[in-house]
Length: 331
Picture 1 (spheres, rainbow, N blue to C red):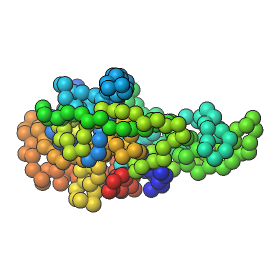
Picture 2 (picture 1 turned 90 degrees about the horizontal axis):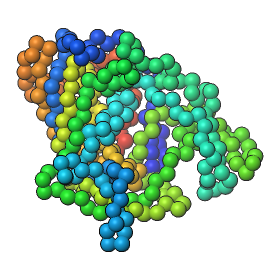
Picture 3 (picture 1 turned 180 degrees about the vertical axis):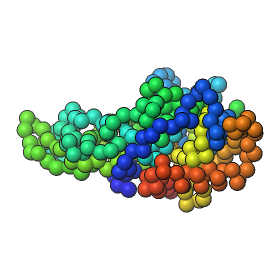
Picture 4 (picture 1 turned 180 degrees about the horizontal axis):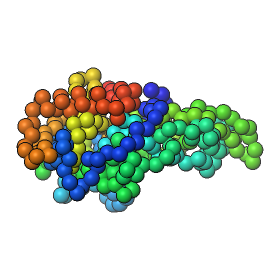
């Protein structure tokens, strides 16, 4: 796993497993699949700020609003689904969206502005080739949706308890990532007061970690934040999901089969500023199999899902191992 101040990279798989997946439909049930709900409990370990784009003036300072659910601190389901998808992609042989090939010139603390672009070699990776469709989908697109293929996982809003409240925290402004930080690079020389850089290879999928450097001119902002040690509850609705897919979902949630395979998640803004770390503390299932029979919520069934994912050809073992190492200690 490659790491830089403020972020780390999970390697890309050498191949994408695109196949026809009969269970990826909504008009009928398939054998050996489940439908129902996973009830998830999260606990915050750092302040969590999910911005709404709104600010309010209070005591002569601007405070950025954070998302609320039912009038309480919460995390929107769309935010959690984005986190879940990025992590599920990292642990499976799934595709990736093509990155921007060029970036406008960016200021640098150490010299002239830098203008970076990706080489053809950097873009010549299996994860960027081809596209997924209903008849040929990678693991993430088949489960979590792609154009013309409905997601079989719906993530509902996560909400804190009725007595919870926000705290006001300080979060420095953040700026877009520098393209020349995402892979190996070489200098092409300087012209027009710019240093031209070519990125020759990419490190992998990017995740925010640790305490990154604060950029020049980055001002501290007052934000509403869910305080540490807050419990939030939410639901994942699933349909036609297999044992292996359920095992993959648990792994993506940081809920591996043992302590060495368990990890925190990062949610919201400031993930590289010691904001956003949460941990899944509980999972209970309310599922029925394809015959409509209730599935008993036991440790044995959860272990079966873990075992199915561990032996699945969709699993990307190196990605899963790197992902679970991302957020130790005070990251």
